[in-house]
Image (tube, rainbow, N blue to C red; front, side, top):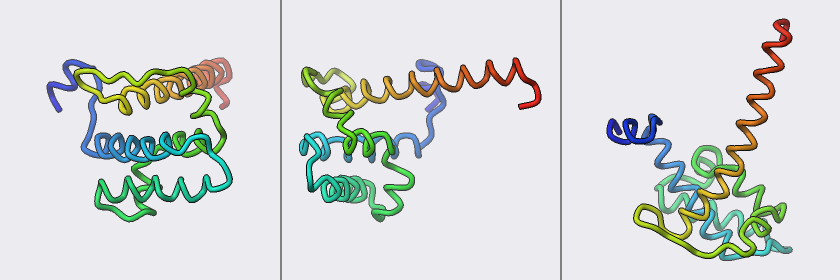
Length: 130
């Protein structure tokens, strides 16, 4: 963890790595069942089950703590299919194709979240009563 922090500037915990693995497990399953159609709910449950099997937790624990909700909502809303349209499967030295593709989706969500938080922080500075 110390080396990771030196290289990335981040300070990940074991939960961060478990969340990544659970989320990618769910992502793999949902990606294989695109586009989301009438049986989308059953595919979401199967994706959560895949994550729970990998991590050794129950479905409810994985859904609440180890599968990022953006993956599930992106699948059911069609945003995941739109994001993946035209993307090639490219792995690398550190990430397989699903890890790399999920990272791209995650970066997009993270950018939106950071933009929203920065805007909120600036509004709070402008209005100290908040």
